[in-house]
Length: 276
Image (cartoon, rainbow, N blue to C red):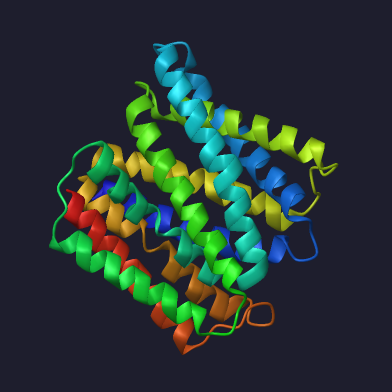
């Protein structure tokens, strides 16, 4: 029961992360905003990981995999996602990033020789239809492409994390986040945008993201993956509902938005179940 609770909490926190991002990125440079969020997340990850550092066996090959995962996820993936949030809104952007499960399944089929089955095929079709519905809303199509690119990055990163996971989940998360922050910081420096933005919404966004990740990994340690992954992947619906209730002035949310988000979420759940 506790595992299910943590899975739902992770979905709610990730959902709140979406609307906090939308508020925080208003009038803020995307690169500087991303650096602020990832810095906050990394700080929290480091504090949580402290208790496990001395007892964690360091396998440098695994650390390399985690570092690469962090660069792909926290640097590349976040930049694509947050750029998308600024362009098409958090509800559509977060629904697009739920394709992470689709890309993770594709990588699993081609690289890990996992089986392709009907739930995965039906789930893929539903996600495609959901994203197509977003494309008919009149928003810039490049925003949808950016969110899907973010999903691709997260899907690839999840594969690397699976290979590189250390005996401490929290130390693994810290290694990934600090490597991503390092490369993000270097990139921001080259663009003259290395700046921690004093914005409460961005700091809260980084906080909700960090604790959402922690809740997710705690859920995985307490409950079967077939339960945890579908429940945790409800976050696009949470973001869409909260956007409708709390930030209508910033983000237009209509029937098509809800339908597209619902189809994307159901599709991702089918894919997750099909992989078990």
